Length: 306
Image 1: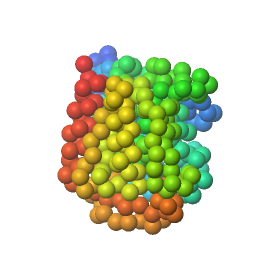
Image 2: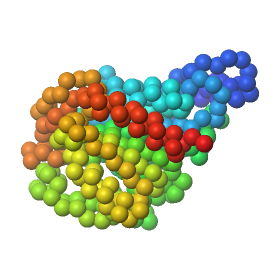
Image 3: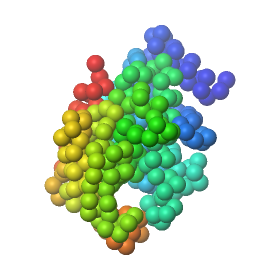
């Protein structure tokens, strides 16, 4: 029997109430929407009887391999404890980047941007909807940094009728959380203008980010990798047009505030918001991280739990 078949059998027994079932974790494979790419993913099931709401967690630039920041797993553990099925796709290994893209050139990053990875997110959504343990109408999306970029790319309303995700987004995610994402766009009608073409500080804003479902952005005030001001402008313009976009900015916090690592400047990091294209400050903020856990739990409970 295949792994997929074994998983289906386990879930069927679960729903039938046969015996005592503990939390389970397995590796599955899904297909990226709009691209002929097979994506490995980690599926984690909570204790108890389903069907459960579910959340797709998109990793940051460090990926899920040996160089991973560990943030996706930390959030997955909390979400499973909150009663969600969690699916974490590995976007980088099948693209021959198992060690992540944090220090790749800006030109190389275009091939693995949030727009490319949004197809992986929708492949994960489609996969979850095949599982009897998942309530297909209550599936959320979450990501941090590059995963936050992917979240914003997954949640905006596309204007181009030929957009590869247009059909998928018409029955897409029910809610989403983006931690310190790149808000520079372009996302549908929302776009920004930079000081030096494709890089440097954002100096102009236009349009409106139209979200397909409720969206929460959490970001640090002192983030110099994905600046909070751009996200504040995005959320402000969205709310002015009654789109369901919320934001919380944490005073004094930097990029990757949801970690225990000390704050430090890493010169090797690729950074489109830097005039040189390099260098970013990262590090944890205990107060911001503690509050983010509360915000994420409350937000998803509001929109994904009956």
